[in-house]
Image (tube, rainbow, N blue to C red; front, top):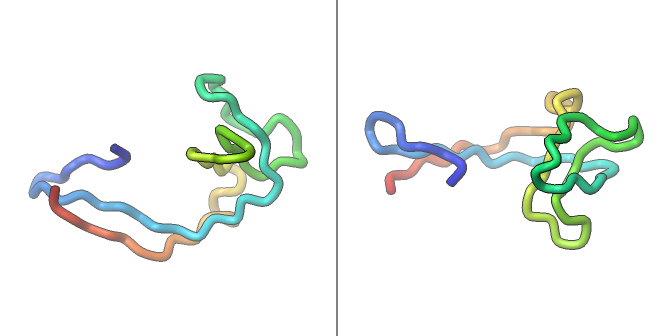
Amino acid sequence: SYCDDDENGVRYLMLCHVIMGNVELVNPGSGQSHPSSIQYDSGVDDLQNPHHLIVWNMNMNTHIFPEYVVSFKT
């Protein structure tokens, strides 16, 4: 659900190492687009069992390391 088919019906998925650092709770639908305080590096939808991870724009280049690109046809 996070990628679309290209003109040949191929989908691409990028697998990355991510440094989460200090994490804050971001409620779904809140529209929050930056940390609530400088002490937070990232956000999650659930502190105990996160399903969605948010790395703030200011940390994109230092906290995300692309490892692989997977391509597949559905």
